[in-house]
Length: 224
Length: 219
Image (tube, rainbow over all chains, first blue to last red):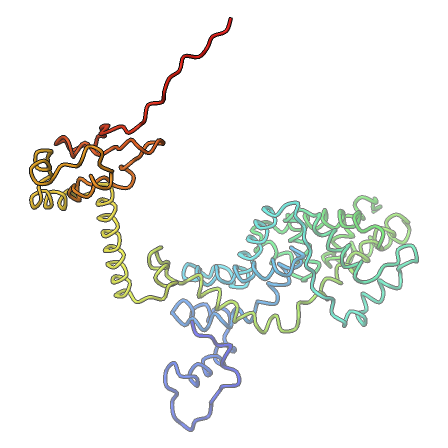
């Protein structure tokens, strides 16, 4: 598979009116720019017709969102990295059988979430956190500012402790409940999208969300 | 319509998701303003959302996503690499050309064959040299010895006897034994009898008998 990561910085576009030689760097660079303007469906079609480089663009588009979902479900950076990489590899290998009945985004999300839920079931009772750092931008976030303004001396907590307690509480939820809270309350996905990813009804999503929030309120009562 | 607390708290969940119609939302707000429990519940639900929002600020290191695609390609290459059998993997690991490997194989096989032959020879010593020598120099019999050389004197020493014996029948250092008295000479039977097995006979005894005296017996 062509590694398009090497292309930026090596682009040699604008070589007169000459048509780039197939598979040359210029040709691949043109392809890369072309892929950036294509929608998911076209990119999937390209990959299915043998243009493997088109898959790079799909990875580029969804790696961050997929990583965030899996990371919030596992509270472990290394596990999240492995699971997301595995999900993309699985998607790449199975893309020939992808019938485009749902969007690529929903499909790859489903692969990642299912793999993560299976992984978490196997990893039961082995909660090892490997938390990412908190971005400094949080200090100016209105939600954070408001939250901290309510913190009484009794509940006074540093940001790191707050992060640890929040992750602990999330890990106490069942895997489907955690997945729903992650996708809705953290990532902002709609009930309909979550229902498609988890292959369940929207009512089930709402019900899981309700019980997960109730449980979290109990676990984090000191901070609410 | 009067809204009970159970229904109000379920609807608070929907309110958080922005799924309530205007009328229901207005009625819920009215109830919450009048009900302390539901007001607290609304406050807690809002703070939980603020707390969960902190998770969005947990980010991996800045270069993590820059190297993500490279790592993906590396993993994909490993995953899609054709599976090799054990023999091919050994060859690949050794980085030896297949032709050279065959040479090593033949060399090894020859070495094994040589070792087998040597072991076989060690456990089954050949009689070829003995039989050849036997053909050339027949084993001397007592008759030969008597005919061919002068007999040793009755009081010959072991050395003098050994000197007249042919090499094959000459007693070795281990075979030529002398008694503790130093006067008993033992020579191989080969000098006396034609048998293949080495046997020893008492050739002469040079022990001077001690005088025996009857001990006085006192009662």
